[in-house]
Image (cartoon, rainbow, N blue to C red; front, side):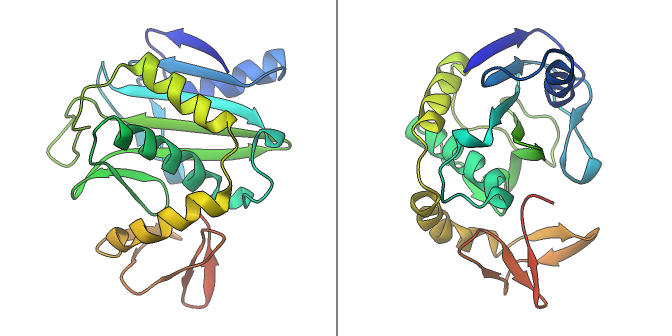
Length: 211
């Protein structure tokens, strides 16, 4: 994974998409910045942070992924592997369905994943510093270079979705105390069913993390 480090950017996700549009895709690429002014969040929202937080995006070819991964659940896959890396470093972080990082009951970050032909773009933001009373921050100190090195090493191992999902399914019980947004409406996760492909069943409708 080639990594481009920037001091400040409006959005790592927009930057990497524009980069590939201009220069084409030749290898897995990550763009990292410790400050972004207009980050991309889910459903078109902005993910705002302060200097010193983690902001990175990467692009890979779908051949980089395990064969059993449902592409629609790639956000869960990318997020859960990073969550495991942070847990191994001593954090108590957990993953709320489908792609939000939490410490206890406070959101500390999230993941956005988009697909364009054979390329998968993933953007991740995590608070290392508190941004407001509504959001939390990571409960450990991390060396971002080391974290990214370990994270991409794990991605390169192509861990099977079945392996990741078996662990995520247990952790999903924590999500049941919360809500998610579907079709611009808040929906309780208390009684939803988690399917083996990572989607949830809501009112006879299958909802994926990638939408």
